[in-house]
Length: 135
Image (cartoon, rainbow, N blue to C red):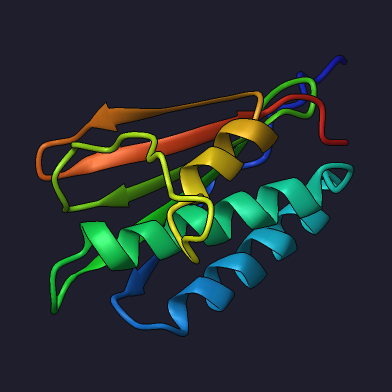
């Protein structure tokens, strides 16, 4: 009897508006990638999770709220990262000054991920990025 192999269940976790949420989200992502044996692009994925989580904390999460991280493994080994936050959906690529110490997070996400974008949700937005074949 042939059994169809189902992709692993998505992983998700909520993080409060606290500094420690960024390294916790990164560690959660590393565990999921390891469990899924999808580690070939782990450094890129982890950096994008850090940038998206940092942006959510700085710009998208009001005091007393938090963000939700969703991770998906697609057939073929691709990984999708989604960060759901209650902030406004006016995400745009910055044009940071050469001497600026911040403002390059989405530029990094755009350079490292195969695709990225912003989606709507009932309250807030979803910033997502995808990586092909990570196994």
